[in-house]
Length: 176
Image (cartoon, rainbow, N blue to C red):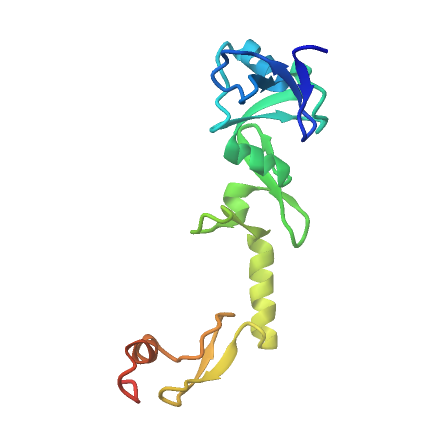
């Protein structure tokens, strides 16, 4: 059919010359056009995503489409659900489906916003690691010779920041 094409990823494309977000061939994904008609404005693909609820890329029925920002769309594909304005997600350890804010620790990196395991599983794993002694390891510092128990899984071989700085400066043999 003229004016229609199939994208390599399975989306239906419609010819729309003059559309601000059309590709080089002047095509726009049909699902985006359906949502634009519903909301009365253009959908900016740099900040918004039209999500197919049933995962069928050719089902562009308005009841099957959901307009999301990019972080929310990623959450949906990771198994999260938005229930009454609160994000819920499954714990990767116990499988329970819990509200995110109260039950998961927040990370301070941009890789993943929240940790995979719920707070209860994290605490349980920490207690078990402390009982079995698998929660950390003992090192002998190659700079000063001190023996030190490291409580985490960090891959350090030095006992302190001073020893690390000695190595970085490549100066003294002993740390203070």
